[in-house]
Length: 204
Image 1 (cartoon, one colour):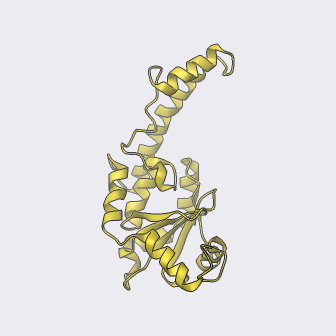
Image 2 (tube, rainbow, N blue to C red):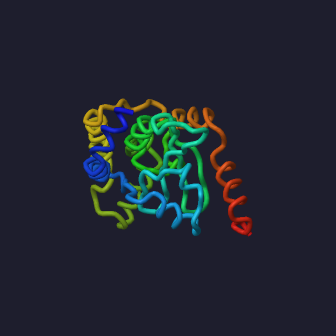
Image 3 (cartoon, rainbow, N blue to C red):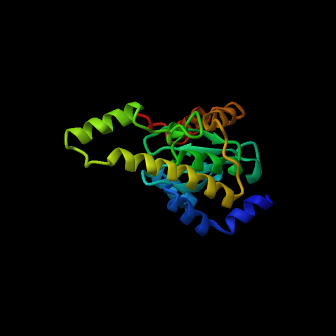
């Protein structure tokens, strides 16, 4: 809980740091109001789903407080604006390495390997496509080299940012998320079941 309180006392700074690192992370000021907006109706689920932050698409990250768990032991869940939902991390401390390693709040974008989204050169498929686009005049000369340099800068920024937050980036971020999913009940099934009880016509 001390770690959580420490983070809570610096929410604004953390949000700014994440945005600076290319991660849109806007803390939710009114969790109840945002969940109501996301679901489209006032729900008792606000007692179990405590919003933390949203991204540019309107998806929500939240504490899932089930079985009377304390916040420090509550898993972090993803509630998508298109109805998708899942557990992302066992707790808030595990969430930060996922965000920094992926640069995204969406679970589909958590990489299998730490530098998966940063590996980029002239021999990769994306590199060959970029070179072809340069040759055909769609990209300006030197675009590939600029992208390679930017990817290297991103690796350095990730490492520096992780050091400032006092976290260690996992070699396999996706495996960390899978472990969290297996440690808790199926959140999407639970969520849909609760919604169907409160609002029987919701999925019609």
